[in-house]
Amino acid sequence: MLSQYLYISTAPTLGREEVDAILATSARNNPARGITGLLLFNGRNFLQLLEGDESEIATLMERINADARHSGVSVLDRRGIDARTCPDWAMKRVLIAESIASRREMLERDLPEGLDPEVRKMIVNFAVLN
Ligand SMILES: Cc1cc2nc3c(=O)[nH]c(=O)nc-3n(C[C@H](O)[C@H](O)[C@H](O)COP(=O)(O)O)c2cc1C
Image (cartoon, rainbow, N blue to C red; front, side, top):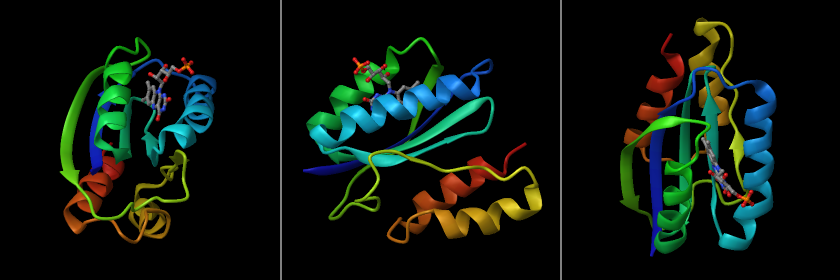
């Protein structure tokens, strides 16, 4: 069964290199596990969308939960999906524009088309905060 998880977490002191390292690890591990998704970091919080086989995602979520680089992992949404919304992304980094005014516009361009409108709204709401 194909599942999709959306969670947020907190990492107030994480730097750019550490986020790059997380993305590199994801790019290395995810393809073999059939995991795809996207990651946003706003300088203080992560939001990650993970898609793949339910058992693979559940195993990865346990590892992510135990990762000391962040805390307060909170699952916002978890659902079965018929098809991946990010089939080509081992883990896409979605950048949040500096200017709040251009954030929505930029996300509308960068977020995958197939996202459920409700999930899309949660991601955009996270990205326009602060
Ligand atoms: C916000 C966040 C997102 C992460 N996403 C992934 C991911 O998609 N895939 C992955 O393998 N590890 C991810 N990790 C890293 C895992 O927690 C863990 O460090 C890693 O899977 C260990 O892999 P390694 O044994 O190959 O170093 C993430 C960590 C954080 C803090």
